[in-house]
Image (cartoon, rainbow, N blue to C red; front, top):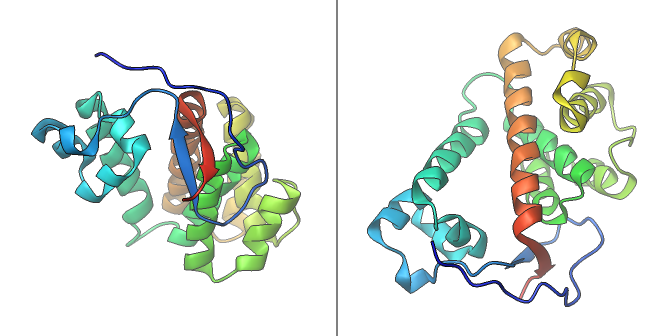
Length: 200
C-alpha cells in the first residue's frame, strides 16, 4: 500500500463537542473517489460512503473495511429486538465524549437526538461530560459505556445489575456492550488517522 502523508498541522479543528455536522481531515491520503476499484467499492458496503474521506482512507484495506462496516451496521441498525436505536447511539456518543472524539460524538449525538427526540438531554452529555445527571436509565447506560471505555474489566456485575433493575434484558445489555465496545475501537482508529474540521 502506497500512501501520502498530509500536513498534520491543525487549521482550526473544532475543540468543542457539538451536534453540528462536521467534516474530517485525513492525515493519510484517502483513495480518490474516482479511483476506487470494484473491490474497494464492495468493501464500502454502501457506495454512498465513497463521499467520506474516512471510509475512502479505510478502503486502502477493503477486506477489513467490509468486515468493519458489516459489524457496524449489524450493531446499530439491527434493532428489531434488544436495545432501542436511541440508546445504542447514546452509548456511542458517551464513549466518544469520554475518548475525546469530537467527530464521532457529533455523529452519534445527532443520531441519539433523532431517535430519542431528546435534544437537550443529549446536548447535556456533550456539554457537561459523561458525569451529566440525566435520568436513571440514561445515566446507567452512560456509566456502563464509560466503564467499558476506560478498561473492559471496569465493567462488571454491578453495571449489569443496575441495567437489569432499570428494565433491560440480556439482549439489550449485550447490544449496549457491542455499541460501546465498537465505538471505543472506532474512536481510537479515527483519532489516530485524522481530525475533525468545520463542515464546508
